[in-house]
Length: 112
Image (tube, rainbow, N blue to C red):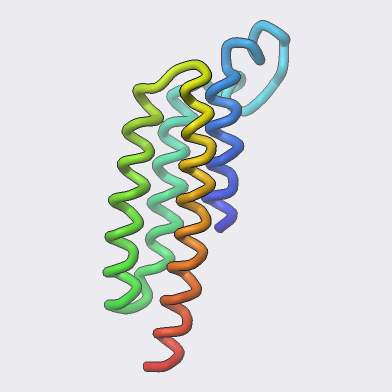
């Protein structure tokens, strides 16, 4: 869940890259670049999803979540400016759904 939380901050810093750079702010995206943010966003989602794969049920839910994560990631890569505000919300939604899925998988696995 922490990996996905950091994605919210990544999107925020990705959106503000140009103004942060002009203002001399030293965010991770300013220091390491926008490509770094996009790749890290993707990797964070993959690593979080991998943690669901502790059972067949978890793997099925992981596949569903990964499709949602990839859809958000693809949109993020092609969006600029204030339109990125929507991706902060979509990333937060993804984190909430992941948390619910994670809890469901834990409950189901404990019953098996």
